[in-house]
Length: 299
Image 1 (tube, rainbow, N blue to C red):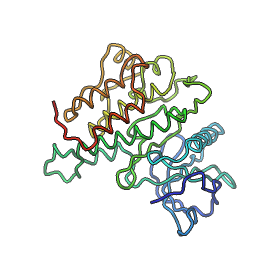
Image 2 (tube, one colour):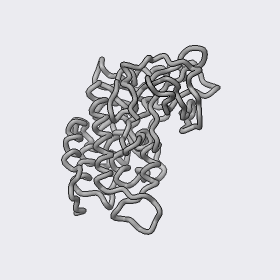
Image 3 (cartoon, helix red, strand yellow):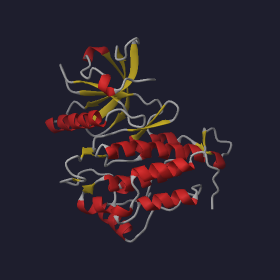
């Protein structure tokens, strides 16, 4: 599906031209539903889209958060590895955000529905190769390189927040925690609230400071998720304090059993205690690009 670039979309979309369908996902304050948008693209009757909306008992703060997420998506613009913002409805009812539809759902569930070629049994699960996994990581890093260049900090980079579209194209999504840091190079959150501690860098856990370096840490955890086909990092009960202790003691996620050493070393670089020693997304993209279509050996 070729969606229009968001700068060409008539952003305010007629609410009565949306046909809402099944629920794709649900959170504490909102839900995402599949929908058909009539007349969104010239020359087509309707277009499959996803619509993000608030639940009935939403607050004024929830509305502001949703509109802030929309502003971030508009600022980021179009990129092949970022979910494309298509429009919104803000008249005659609660706000709706319209984005492109990703047919294969989120990356975590997608990975769990597959098996690795080298582990293939008689299971009916479809197969992914190591090159597939490296390609997935490369695409996410490519999208994050764009976000970083736009001075946007995602803050919630995890496999559950990557969507998989046709052709196994990775799309960074869920900008609910993202922030524009044009005015400074970092963002400090004032309250702890609900944050994804298993994916957070030590400085984010300790000081609630987020920047491109902390996003790089989270990417390392996401890369680990990819290489383990969607396993949960630190698969035991952890809280804020215990997570801090684990990381400060130098403990890190172990190398996945099918992960080539050089790729695990890239993960470890993302998990440097010193944020300045972590690779930039441009460096991560360069490293992963060199490994696509490689003949891997598990050392």
